[in-house]
Length: 224
Image 1 (cartoon, rainbow, N blue to C red):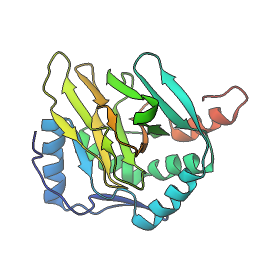
Image 2 (image 1 turned 30 degrees about the horizontal axis):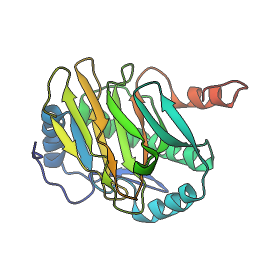
Image 3 (image 1 turned 180 degrees about the vertical axis):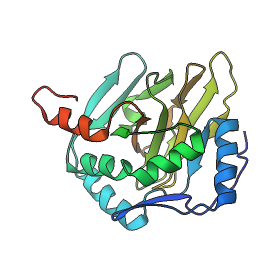
């Protein structure tokens, strides 16, 4: 399961003023091959360090509530606030969409919608194998300030035991881009130790413009 490429510098980076693709043409070619083979790709320092520090301070002051996703998982979820709005706004950048389209093969992406969640070993949180069907590409960004144990992202073909990739995304600001499909499922392995995993995670899709989603959320009884 060793990565096909070893990139220690940003390929795509999101800063307060917007996103920029930093990958060379050769690196983009390698990224496409990596994503096709492992159905996932690690993005080093996706969030620019100064912006990350500001986001982490806001997340530290935010309110988190218990949330269960049926029988799939349990977690703490950050209540909707300005920080969440900023995170979603920053990812909904045409530069980000174009990079994801080129790497994954998806076309005409129009939106990314995410949440900030926290997994804690002492609260017995879990995340079992699931598919996130109805979406096209997923992404998870590490917003934590400390290295956590466990919580390794794994993705595999349905009906197989061996993951195509297992990524311990423990570096603050790094991200994982991963495929979604009828033949794929993913999970986070059980957490260990006292440090929680805090991540901004969500899905890219082609069907709805993000501005329409924001408008609906602003209406009484809108999307949660």
